[in-house]
Amino acid sequence: MASVEYPYGSEPYSTLEVRHVELSEPQDLGTSNKEAVLHPESQYPQVAGPQTQPIWDTSKLEANTASKEAITEKDNSDKAKRRICRLLPRMFYIVLAIVVVLIIGAIAGGVAGGLFSRQNTTSSPTPDGKATPNVNVLNISNLAASNWTDAQGTIHRSVFFQDPYNSIIARQWNSQNKTWETRNISRLMQSATGGPINPKPGTSLTSASSDSKRGPLYEVQLWFSETADDGDTISWVTSPNPAVAPYFWNYVSSGIKTWNETHLAAAWQRCPDDQCDGYWAVAYQGPKGYIRVANSSNWTDSGGGPALRANAAAAGASLALLPALNGTYVDGLTLATQRRPTYMGRSTLQANGSWKQDDGRVLDGVDPLKTRQFAATMMNNWNEALFIALSNDGSVDAARWDGEEYSSIPEITFAQGQSTSFSAIATTTDAMFYGIADDQIWEYTINTSDPSTFIFVGKIYPD
Image (cartoon, rainbow, N blue to C red; front, side, top):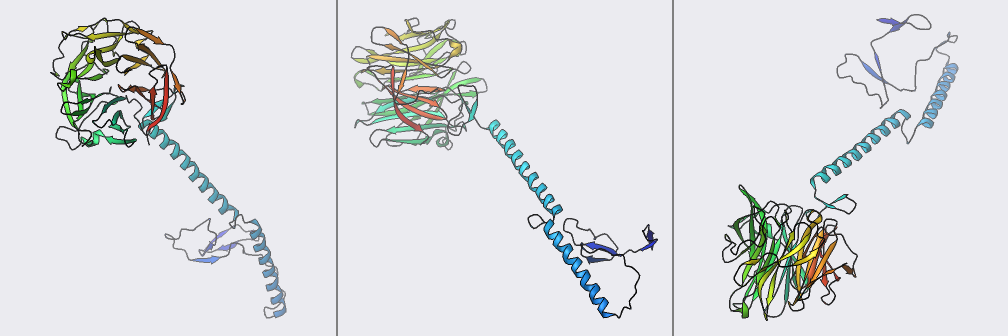
């Protein structure tokens, strides 16, 4: 027995433990050797006065019992009044604290997850320098486009880009059923004996298509850069029969070494009177800075010397390549290149197979440090051409070749559609313009009678 100080003297202290019926204070008795009995929290020991009546006095006993019941009811009533949401105040505040902690944890987790997602998801640059997450198009993706026409007169167009997973995606148009179809080229090449392909993130993309009547020959090709142990090389994929087997592609690595982050530009040159299959050509910047054009006669030897010497070309020069018209048939090539200090210049392929490197200025005021990309298209039955320069701020400048001279177009108007800041552009040879903006790809048709106006067609990706 133990004793503690008590107002009325020394009071015995028992090892019998009173267990409170209060959920907010659970008692751990698993390791105790004490006996426990339940005792309502509202009932406490009362100090009793001198007993003047015998215990067998029932009237006093009933009155005393009634008095205790009244006190108990009052205490219970007071407790009921003190409850919040049917819980004792202390229990209510404990539950409230737990809920608040859970809410704060959820908010913190959401913020952390959002930050992690932002760090691991590609994003698109906006004019104010901020970035928004991309879900459709790789934020540094380039764009390529080409077109061909089948024997029935149906127009086919292909637009290529990279998705946020670095896969090369093709959107292909059929003018007969007026639909765009999506094909994941990287996925299609996973099971190919020559694949899989491994394009560099943000690689320059360039495409050309053929529609020779000899054969007939219909083919779509796409060039891109891959990284090898000894530097970057040009590779490409080919759809050899796009009308019948649009999901079948072949892969080829050329082994052509390039300048780091080189731009690419490609063209298919028709054979006069369709007496041959024609030939493919791709322009690139070589490891020493010169601009060369390789062709399908021998990809490892570009022949004809450089299209532009290294000391005249800007590092990472933007390029645009077009078939040229020679009399009544298409023959030769016209190459637009980024020149130092600040202009777009022209090189032309001559009849003897050599390049005339300095064949006039296409567009002045093109600063290589503020220029992102070039594109070009033919107009008016191949008699005219339009050359376009995309600036880092998303705006475009252009120059028109009318068959005799170049003239600058002061401003491009994007009619029937909101003028948009583009991160990449592409054109087909039938005067269609494509641009990546706001994680989407938009299509315009160029007004060939007034090429300062681009008429809005619609969004081609996503659906």
